[in-house]
Image (cartoon, rainbow, N blue to C red; front, side, top):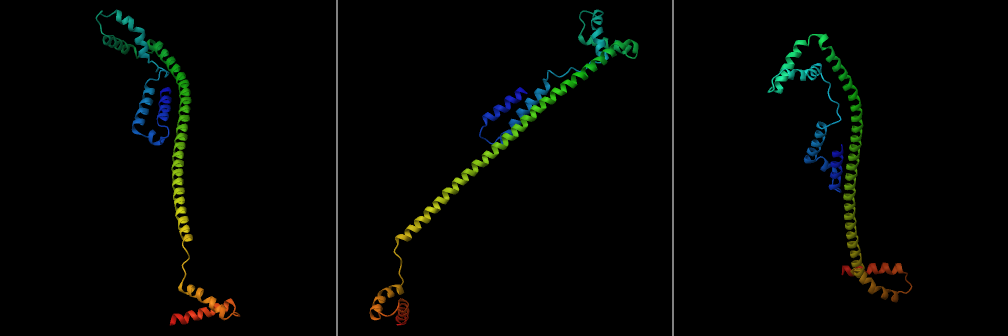
Length: 224
């Protein structure tokens, strides 16, 4: 568990600010993680020892006695062969093997109790691992949200710059229009020239009547 913690914390530290989902699902990362998890399973020193069979108890009990009956140059395999033969001779006799069967049953009971305790501890460890899983998911979501926020901020900044440029262009166009003198039509020029003359010639006419006369004069002038 400590190796797993160290690995994950180092991975987070080394890849701070990066998209964690991509890093986590990377092939090399998953291979390293698999090695840590598999090695942890193989080297579990807290796992209970498996129960011994009646035959194993018989071998442990008779080993020294059997060795004394053999040559000094005997091999370990020779001892096992002899013990195997001796066991085959008595294994069907319940009275002779009763003691070894009892020892095996007690060992099975011991193994059963130890396994219950061991599994309970393993469940607690798996809960811790699930906490890590939740943490990694939350961290991944946070990184993704952060990345989205950064992209959104960049987009907003770009949009603001574009809007500013557009506003500047509009302002320039307006300024140019203001600077330019208004373009007068031929009719407007004509009215500007003839209006004072009509006012002088017909002082009693209203502004609307003078405008009407100017319009009529313009029509006749245009025809000519």
